[in-house]
Length: 115
Length: 109
Image (cartoon, rainbow over all chains, first blue to last red; front, side, top):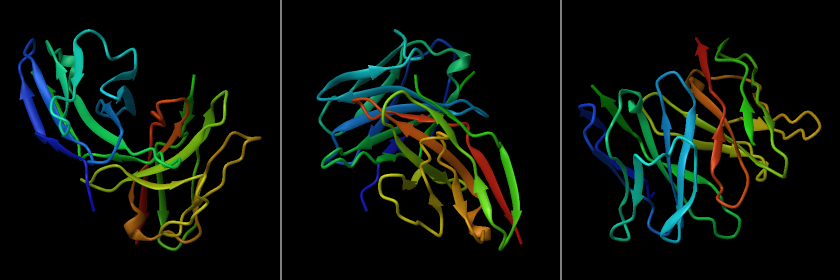
């Protein structure tokens, strides 16, 4: 069964450094998402991406964040200058949305620790 | 704005007992409601959604628009049901999900 894959599974970075989190969505899916979950809190929407552009973003997704689909298969989240409060689990998801099927498939997550 | 409330952070039951995980939502339009489950060290996966009206692993959930609820139920809990359960709502053109805080279900032997 096809899966969304994320790399790395765990990333430790120093405050102020740039990080890129990578995701390979399911190949025939059209919508791509990033969510994050700070420890002990709920899963929060960051951004959705459709037709090679951001279709919606949350208040969390400020100028420090960017997304890209550089080669038609990878979907990346970049944090330009990490802060301590960016420490969280980041989930990538994709959905097909054909024929009304809106099920989102999630990756296993990348745990980002900013020190 | 869409919002999901799961009032119980933790729920503990014995094997064979009925279980109900509560979920209430607020949304101005016609939302789509989901239950996602996360077993230990595994990814979030869809358990069920209101439009399919299926029963998955013995779980059911009925959308009550009057009470704006989508409670998850199972008549006889099993130990393997122990997991984190998230209620989620989707609405609008981008199908983003808004999650509740989740309920950690523990089924004791």
